[in-house]
Length: 379
Image (cartoon, rainbow, N blue to C red; front, top):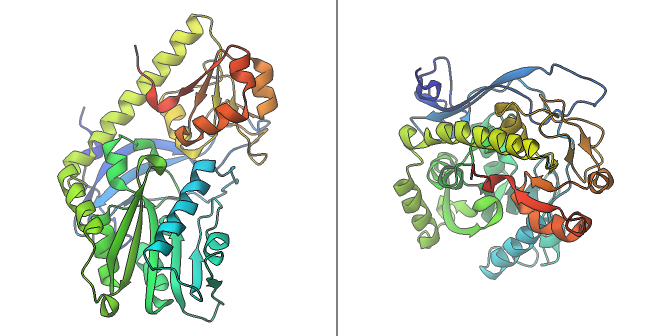
């Protein structure tokens, strides 16, 4: 059977450059909306929609081919790793001279929550008013939620004051490719940035990247500082050129390289199903932790239901008493997790593993173990 991820697609226009030349590099088939967690009392079936990553051959932006879903975004609990990274990032930016006392700051935040404004104001910055241009524009996982990437970036660039800096944080496409993070693809996340593609997008609105920092969050998150070309007096820092060189070696612009994500999706789904089946047959109880969007495609692609995974615990009250989209798996609170005394707790958000082990010691006190879902093997 032909690999559906390699097919050309007609009637697609790039969300950034408006080009029409490109191809699907990852096709996860028909999936429920990753942010729609139905009440447990509503059995389904849930609506499903195509979930495909399309790579523009003209500007190399990886993006959702289409997204007919309507965002619901029930708020999750922000991992400690995310807040710690934000604090580190603001300190590095300030140390590099990009954040100064008196700077006016405008933030384009993520609909998932979290803000850097309390951190930057501690460094003497103030929040820009609606009618002001900003010396510092913050975008932490914000623009990826914009369907029209070109328009969203142009809006941000128009708000940037002379001599200002745009700070743009993103989960790198290089990371997604390097670590086979195929289930980073989800409805509502319209773009998956390589530094290479983002630099081209910035050039179209008169901006140029000047400095970059890489953090361990999500396996590799980049914070990029960009300025107006007229303000780029000094040459681009090697932190940017080194990132781009690494991405080129990895092949973030090559459809053939990106198609390995398709193979990873098929492999990881089979591994999860085999692993859960083996533990069920051995009489060991497994409960999930972290009702994250990245778990939705994995559970659906592996055809996992409550017979193999009877519950997923989550600390967010907004998700409790609901169920994982496309499945009959209920989302429960931490109290029910410990009451079940599971042999294994399977964590779907690796960044949470250390945090929840400390916060819920009862699991190990009862003889249970915590397992990172990304580390599973058939062994």
